[in-house]
Amino acid sequence: MNRDEILFECAQKIKDDKDFDAKQEYQITDESGAVRWIQKKIVPLYEEDKYIEKIVVNLDVTEKKDLEKLAITDGLTGLYNRRYFDEISSREISRAVRAKSFLSLSIVDIDFFKQYNDSYGHDAGDKALISVANTIKKSAKRGGDFAFRIGGEEFAILFSDCDKEHSVKFIQKIVQNVQNLHIPHSNSKVDKYVTISAGVVVVDFQEENVDKDGFYTMADDALYQAKKTGRNRVVLYENDDLEFF
Image (cartoon, rainbow, N blue to C red; front, side, top):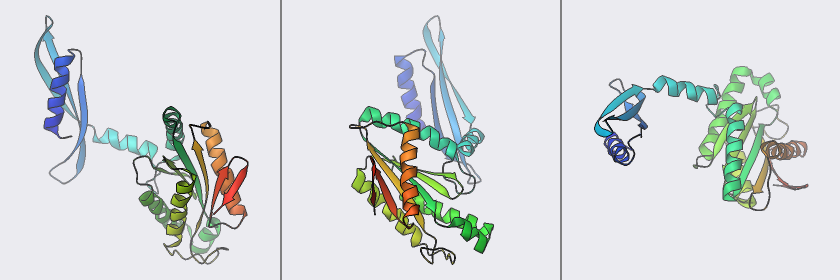
């Protein structure tokens, strides 16, 4: 929405509701080429219950936006952080309950990452984390997809509207894409390149219900089985059974 559209929308709302304070945020590019956030607030003025005019206030809220982003973002990888994972998990579960739809969670772990750091050093380890994170981020690009770094070499992918078959295929593709990065890992016991293991849980909220903690625990249990049974693979949690891929 451009500024003219914002002004038009706000003016229409002012006509319908004299107590309405219109506020919109949008991005601009300043003379130096930097992107900045502007908050436009339009406040109607009345005298003896009669509309007189509107006051338009423009505020540069770039710093506020930057601070908000820092609060929810992992500093190394640029993915969302664990704090935001907890918030979004609760929100998306509530949404799935209302919509009676599918919601999937995958917990992902880099295989033998300690050995990688021991062999190549922590700087190389950070670069590997960034590469894996970028691969996950490029794959989780739909509107209902969220990618997080939730600790160390562990990531989470939360995504909606996929049944079990499509959820597994989606995560399998990410596992393959990471392997295709061809990051050398001489101390891996499963491959000569860096690989990941993944656990997946898919809940159909039309048939089942689960809270945030249970959702995470099931995905984490599936990840444990993926690591226990050879790594570089996807395990799907399904009730008391685990399906291997």
